[in-house]
Image 1: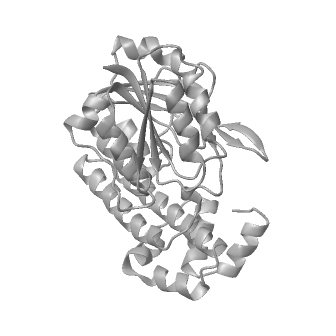
Image 2 (image 1 turned 180 degrees about the vertical axis):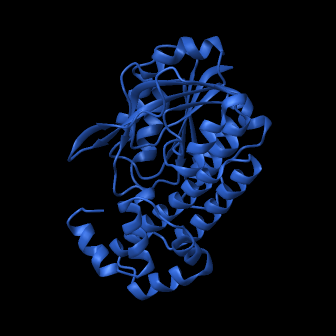
Image 3 (image 1 turned 120 degrees about the horizontal axis):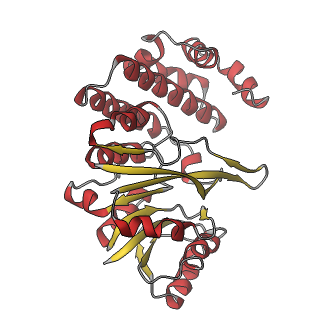
Length: 327
């Protein structure tokens, strides 16, 4: 059995995929690595590029499938993986030199079922910016103090992402944890809430070794009206999670604010993609979104402003704020 399986869904990423793969295989000399590349029906040269990589390195497992989306690709990767630990990498991201080797001794020790670290945001036009620390360096959690993890999962973006984590494959398989293939946003949050419930011991290292590439052409930046429906699903799941694990009222408040901020981001994205003001108004009239906008007393100027904009359908004002990059 391998130590690490890295799963990379690939769809039309010929511009970046070579850098991504090289940052992994060129900087890890051991044979206990399995790199699973899932070609999710790419129509560009991505398939040819990864086929050549697989021909040259026996640690690479290449899977070709019809386009089914990143969640289906990750689920396929999980079904094929043989590593003790799983790491997810996006095809347009890359690791720092020596990133995997820095964790090898810790992973071999098997002291923790989950190892977290941190990432940098990489923008070709702006440069590199470190993410905020998730915890203090060396922070450990066990089953008795996991509420700190739960609180971040349900009310912030801080732990929602898949990258910069080593997951324990046995936890995933023993508890049948998979990605929801029917939603476009929030599937990583649902996966993490399930996973961390079963994780018993983890450690955070404040190392910025994963490079998240800001790519406005990626799937997460494209828009589809179905994302409003996805927000309903993820919000309901978070509320259920809060009730199941008896989290306090402050956590529920923060989770509702989190949903309002997510709704605001969706409206911004809709406007940027030329969805009509009338169509957005109709969406916000739905009982769920109406309750998110009206049934909470928001604290803090920025979030209060977002609530006011949504309450009063101030979309022209919002467009102005977007143009001057004020939101």
